[in-house]
Amino acid sequence: MGTRLRTLIYTFTFASWVILASGTHYYQNSLHTNAELRPKETHLETKKYKREIAVTTNHEESGVLLPADTPQSTLPPATDGDASDLPTCLLCVCLTGSVYCEEVDPDMTSVPALPKETAYLYARYNKIKKITQKDFGDIVTLKRIDLTGNLISEIEDGAFSKLTLLEELTLAENKLVKLPMLPVKLISFNANHNNLKTKGVKANAFKKLTKLRNLYLAHNQLEAVPMIPESVHIFHIQNNNISTVNADTFCKSNNTYYIRPNMNEIRMDGNPVNLAQYPNSFTCLHSLPVGRYQ
Image (cartoon, rainbow, N blue to C red; front, side, top):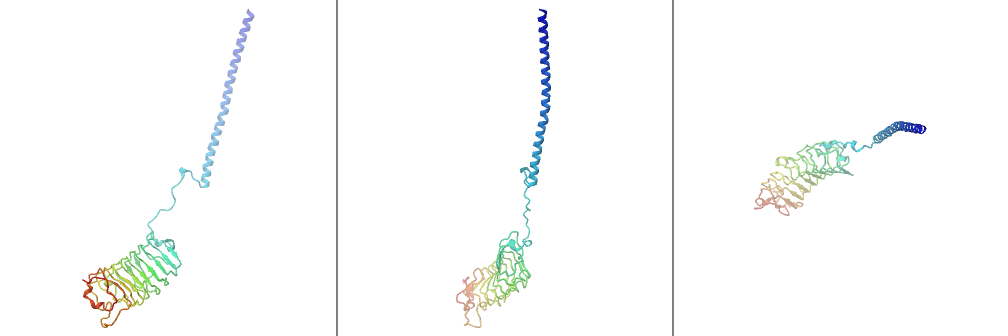
C-alpha cells in the first residue's frame, strides 16, 4: 500500500512538471514568433511607403500630375489690347493681293500695316478713327479700299495722293465732316451715312475725277449739290438738307441745247427742296431726278 502511494505521488509530481515546462516553452515560442512577425510587418509597410514615393516621383518626372495636383490653365488671360500690336496677317485674312480685316478682335483702331503689292483692302466694321498720310503712303498698288462702318472722323490731306491706281473708295458709315483730296482715277466713291457738311465738301471736289461713274453722298448734312463730273452715271444725294438746285448743277445754263449723255440715275428724295420749282435745272437730263415735286 505504501509503495503504491509513493508511485502515485511521484507520477502526479512528474506530470505537473511536464505540464509546467510545456506551458513555459509555448509562452517563450509565442514571444519569439511575435517578435519575428513585427519586423516583417514593418518591412512590408516600409516597402509600401517606398513604392508610393516611387510612383509619385515617377509621375512628377514624367510630367503626369495626379488629379489633386492638376494646376489651372497656364494660358495668358484674354486682354482688351489693340490690334495694332499684332501682325496684320495674323489678325486678317491675307490672300494674294487682297487683305480682309473685318470685325477684328481685339479692336482695330487704325489702318493696319499692309503687305507690299496689296491691291484690295477690306477693313469694314472696325474702330478705325483716323487716316493719316503714312497709312497708304507706300502701298501705291491699291485699287480698292473699303472702310465701311468705322469711326473715321478725320482724313489727313494727301492721305490718298500717292494712290494713282485707286479706282474704288468706300468711306460709308463713318463720322466724316469733310472730304480730303481724292485720287483722280476713281471710278466709284461712296461716302453715304456720314456727317458731311457743305463747307466740308468743296464745290469742285469731284471736278477733276474724269473717270468717276458712281457717286454716293446720301444720308449726310449737305445743303448744296456739288459740281458733278460729266462721266457720272449714278448720283445719290438723298436724305440731306438741300433746299435749292443751281441751274448749272446738272446742265449748262448758257447752252440750252446741251444734253448730258451719261447721267441716268439721280436720287434727291428726302431733301426739303421742291424740284418742281427748278425745271430748267433738269432739261439736259434723260430722266428727272427722284425727289419731291409738290
